[in-house]
Image (cartoon, rainbow, N blue to C red):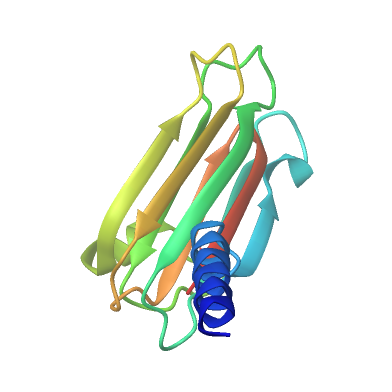
Length: 145
């Protein structure tokens, strides 16, 4: 009887380890998915404001299949501003120069293969993101926890 209890405890321990290392206990939530190729015209400049919910301690940005929208145009980039304020519609990066916690730029001008990138930010002061894309396509997903 004692032996059966030890075996059961061992099996439960292994199951807990497998579940926790596989990410099944991950509390990340998809906050938003941004389709960069949804723009109008070959040199589309899209600006998207994202508000980060209160109580968020981690923000992860995942870019998938990022490439040029129009290969005939040399400029192609995605700029992400991580802000300590909530962005408003119609504002650009110039409106937030004193509120930028961090900036990430993905330059796609010379890329021949799609890029996949992941940025993780562990900062409780993040209140919003401003994402701008010029001549870029692909998707950006924003996860919070």
